[in-house]
Structure formats: structure tokens, C-alpha cells
Image (tube, rainbow, N blue to C red):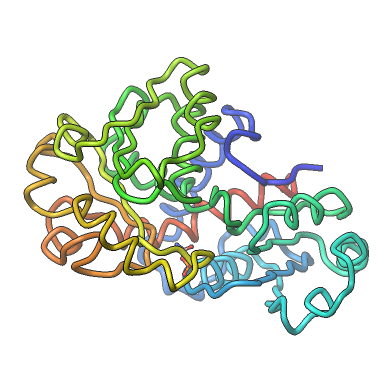
Length: 308
Ligand code: CP
């Protein structure tokens, strides 16, 4: 069973294969209308369940379109409308869904929910985001960096802001793809120490630098995300903004990075909070390529899961 649960749980050669395949599939579609079926239809006769217990624009649409381009069919399910939201166990839900569909993509809150789904499903399960990690996003980010600048191995990547679930998967990717990562943000929002230690154990540098200007020195890629994630209480908003104001990505910060540095944000962005519009719409920004590449990267992830 090939579940795609996290980047650090997936073999680096498999991750590399997915990125390369995504690139080939993207190139093959160049210039064609979005609804054009892929020349190859590896998901023909396959049914995919897309379960969302949290809101989504990119993940929902990119998985749905990706399955259809590859000849498969989808059903989009909201957690609250399923019996899952009304007392049926995750294990029973996994067993039942596995009788109907060939693949399950799940966006949920607790990581344990995803892991239980994977444990009891007899079809592959893909992590479409939990409170702890967001591996599909980072597969798209790696693909995006490499299509603009070549291999990411050996590069310096800086995450500024909240050490959240997207940051966690980026740290996992540092170890698997061989790039250095610096986190800059307030101590209370540090990423998990075990994730940094894991990356360091794989021979890359995963460090914390409290001063964002120092952190950005010589960066090849600067990444941020919203200051208040979906699982954070809205009551934390004002405190978060006060804590994180100094970690905004603006022209002054980008000027510390290498001249050809890229800027990424998984979106949705809160312009003028974590990033200024000058940077979002400026020459370093590749945020909309990043969003597009969710489609291509996830198509490769699904093919890997299904072995097709
Ligand atoms: N980046 C991301 O996962 O976007 P959505 O929340 O819109 O899916």
C-alpha cells in the first residue's frame, strides 16, 4: 500500500520520480485547454474520494481537475455531511470507502485522523493537509523552484513567520531533497524541534535565526504563509499579528536575499500582513506558478500511490 502521508515518510528517490513525472505531464499539456484529457489516461476506471473537513480552494480544485485529466472520476465529500461527522469511527469509514473507491485524499484537523484512515483503508490515502503537515503543497513548491532555477539541492531556503504545518513539510523536504533551511520567527511559533533534528540528521542545515534580516542573507528562496492558520483560534489573531509583524516579507527583506531569489506563498495570502503586494506581484514571486503546480505535482502523487 503506497500512502502519501508525509514527505519524510516517502523515499527520496520516489519523491524525485514524482517531481520529474509532474514536469513531464505539465509539459505535455502546454497550450491545451484545461479540460483536455491527458494523452495517457492512467486513472481510467478509477474513482477517487476527496474528503474535506476544512475549507479549500486549491487542494479541492486541483485534485478534482487532476483526476479528470487522467481519466478518473471524483466525489468531493465534506466531513460534516458524512457519518464521520456524526459518530461513525474513522476506521469504519476507511473500511467502507475502500469498498467503493480506489484512492482517498483527506484534509482534516488532527494528524491521528489521517493516520487512522490510512491504517484501516485498503486503498491508498493522500494527506491533503492536517494541522501538522501539508506535503502536497511542498511537492508543488519543489517543482516550482526547480522549473525556475534548476535543482534545489544545496540551496538556502528561508521560512519566515509561523512554524506551521506547511513549514513542517518544507523542513521535511530539506532533508529529503538536500537543501538548507532557516526558520525565522518568534520562539513561541517555532517548528517542532524533532523536524529540525531530522533534517539535520540527513546532512543538511536546519536552523533558527530570530533576526529576519540576518536569516534572509543569501537566501535562494523565501517562503511564508498566513499568520493565523485554519486550525488556530481567531481569538489569537491580534496576538499573532503583534508577534509576527517583524517577519513580514517586503522589499527590504527580499533585498537581503540573493538577486535571483524566489518568493513563495502557498495561498491564500493576506496582503500587507505576512507579505506586501509589492512582493506578491513583484519579480521574485512565483506564487501563481506554485498554485498551478499543485495540479501537476498531485497528479504524479496519485499515479505513484496507484502504481499507474
Ligand atoms: N494552499 C492550499 O492548500 O490552499 P487551499 O487551502 O485553498 O486548498
